[in-house]
Image 1 (cartoon, rainbow, N blue to C red):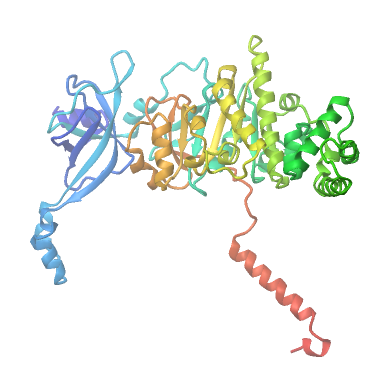
Image 2 (cartoon, rainbow, N blue to C red; image 1 turned 90 degrees about the horizontal axis):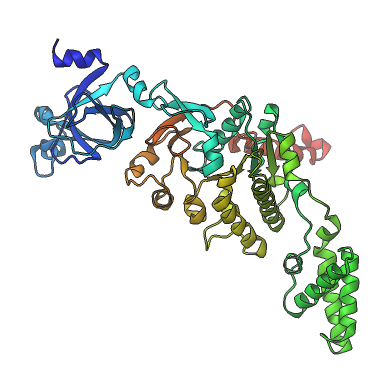
Length: 524
């Protein structure tokens, strides 16, 4: 049996030969005429020192060359006249560039290639059955909680993610709008409800997209049910909007009420402000006292409604024990300060409870933070600078730095990784990256995660909807994989496309206009 027949029986098809200039992590090869290679597909080479061992590679670029079509040659001159230099077709060839991922040694241990392939080394296209031996999870699953999320691109080989690893190490999910991030999350949570044991999730839902998870047993709760009473004097003054001496008077009044153990309400606060002003220690003249009292009173009456609506928040731990997934709906209003304060409060409660239960081993959860740039923005891109914004950023940093050791994992979701606090991104040791075309966002992934290769930029722009490249501790593969995500549930977006909405608006306006016409004109 010839060598080629042996390879064919092993599920390998010769498709090219290595060129000069290869390195231990880069393969350049010429593709045999009539054969084809595809970007993101896997190919094999033999180990240069141990031919019985195959090394896995993945193509990230393929481009044709034809010396007749170089500027100054006959091809461009013929094209100028509207002819094709077909006689130069035989000179055309395709060169593919592939990253060398590694191989399994005799003991089943994954290793990087130690030497560069030699010129004329054979490059093989594997059958799916042969490739499956490389792409099947080989590690021990005793401490894993694997969830099937889709298929490895171009194959029927299932791709898994380890939820246990996420709870101990955090995950970043990034990608452009409409690339499939939220669909990935909603399907991950939906599928997880069938696992044994069933993991627990807290989802910060900024846009009200996750209500579809209710049919899987999740519970949607407005965020303000978890908002803690505001009793920090500086934050109250900031929320009411006072500055200067008026702010100082209000802060002193709040401190006095809290010190006396009195209820904090609009009525009690106005009364305490009046007492402080009438004492005359801050405002000296009667005219100024009246002016300051009226001004502060107006602000409290018009911007202090939250003082009368405050109540004890729900206990996030008790709610999580009763529901496998809690969807915290932040879309119910636009109170940025309260939303930031609530997010900080929830994260602190979860982290502190996990730390208290560390010796009991009876608490773990994954907190999914949608639109993470809203809760942990990079310096300079804050939505609204405030004490609450600073507080939630600090809480995010503290939680992502500490909580993994106590089985609380953060799953950070964003369409703009460049705008997310880098100290949060760098703590994520698992990444699912959907299509990204912005150079700044690509650089944020390259610089602050562990992919460590400029070749990522070749993969990301070409990913289709609901395709992601995954790598890290929660991906049971020793190298990044491109996954076609299974999608059964979709996030709750607008009920129709804009075109349909405009058509309905136009019909409605025409009906109203007709209704307003005098009776004798309507028949026309």
